[in-house]
Amino acid sequence: MSDVMSAVPERRLLSSFSDYAGAQAVVDRLSDAGFPVENVAIVGHNVRIVEQVTGRMTSARAAGYGAASGAWFGLLIGLLFGLLSPGPVWLWLMLWGLVLGAVWGAVFGFVGHWATRGRRDFSSVQKFEAERWDVMVDAEHLLRAQSILGSTGGSAATGARAAGATAPGAAGPAAPTNPPAPPAS
Image 1 (cartoon, rainbow, N blue to C red):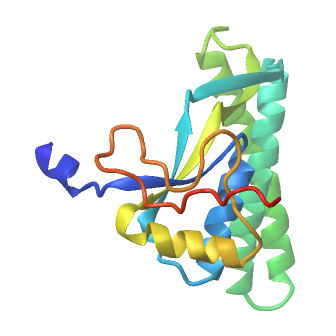
Image 2 (cartoon, one colour):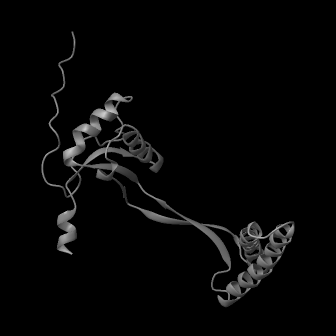
Image 3 (tube, rainbow, N blue to C red):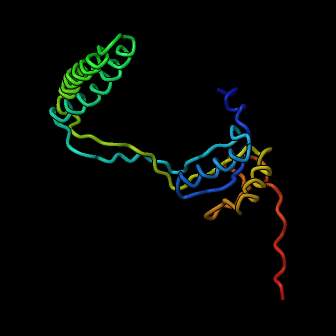
């Protein structure tokens, strides 16, 4: 385990976002500019999983979902076999694949739901949410990343954290910055 920990490079904060899409957009801008994005990480802080219940799951609904997915699979198999067959036989193979796929999908969907014995009678989708998303860059690539973002439309940093801050747990100071200019009179 110590080999894995020693292989992780020192990373610095490039920018921070309240949503994942913003962090993803910065990495995309870096990639478009030819930056070695294998030196970038998107780190979520205070991450939680949110499971949104989308509806009640009944045996009939499970069979219906199974039939729909089975029909697509059967259609694909029928198409593959149909491409290798001569004449109008391919149409019949696709049709039989669709029907048999739907039937077997419905059976497996029903049996799969029945096997849970009512322990999970709902359908849901899960997603990750975080308080903030930080774009971290290996320390030796930080200045180049900052210059790319600076030349493509201003600073990408948002919120209270500024680009170049040291990541929590990382050693060493951030990249040097110039002191603020005196106010004009």
